[in-house]
Image (cartoon, rainbow, N blue to C red; front, side, top):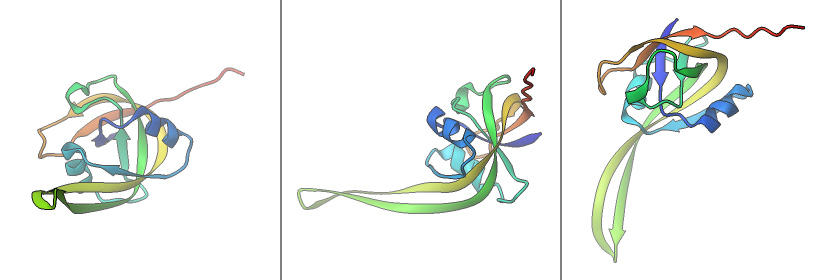
Length: 132
């Protein structure tokens, strides 16, 4: 299955998502925001999430597949003051996404065309069998 990939996600968040509860997370990495901006949320929209950095993502890396429930992009204006005088003004874009755990998966192939294009991966859903 080919789907969008979010990289550099904390292992604690991935572990929390595996417990089955939907979570809303805020993304500030440029490559993750570009990826989210290119996706429409829906009941069949899958995203691959991994703690591996974008530069190191390769075949065989572990992660999880999640359903994309909702997205929201926003721009925040930040003004810093020092001793009552104007110091610095900047803007920061962020994306808030609500996701729900689907399955554990492994990267089969990576499709990365640069920071201005969404990152996609071909994934294999892992199967786990228990002898009983």
